[in-house]
Image (tube, rainbow, N blue to C red; front, side, top):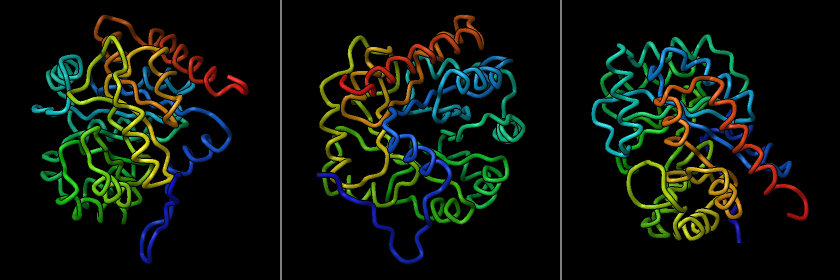
Length: 276
């Protein structure tokens, strides 16, 4: 049984990200959210355009941080390259403001950067740049309040993560405060490509569905079109990061992104096809 999200008095109505993903889901589509580290290569904004052209439903953009505790070697390498190139949070926001990508944008980073900038200043700068959502991977639910309040006020949807180890009561609390979509962590560990999807994704997605009707996207370890399709047999969509970022680090540019995201899109469309 899937729970219905009921917003209490004073809670924000669905924002741009949630509305877009719900609309796609309600039309029977599976959701695709590719991840790109901002500043990792000179043409990273062109990569975002290619991913959107290839069928992404939203785009997750990493803002590099020096201690990315959730990320594995590939994303860490991309972040190191971005920092070495002089990438700053404000520079990322400025670049996104002029990108005109046509799909909702979600930034992913770590709380230290938000704390140093100030909750309200960061939230308002993201909103002014047209960023619809934010993921702060190391900010726990118990300490979320000041940021989430500023984000809600600015119209930035705070996407939260549910892990395979998260107990049902905590899943319910996370989902009640989540906005945009719920990020279902497909397997324990840091980000990175895996040979197989693992056995946890169905269970974690099931616990999320018991708590909310927000869109549920599985990520962490989703590496190939076949794995994306497998995840989407239970989830509403997938987040794919390391597999795309690796291709960019190996010298692939916008054309490589267009091909790979297109392959992911086709795999998800096949899963969503009637009778499949």
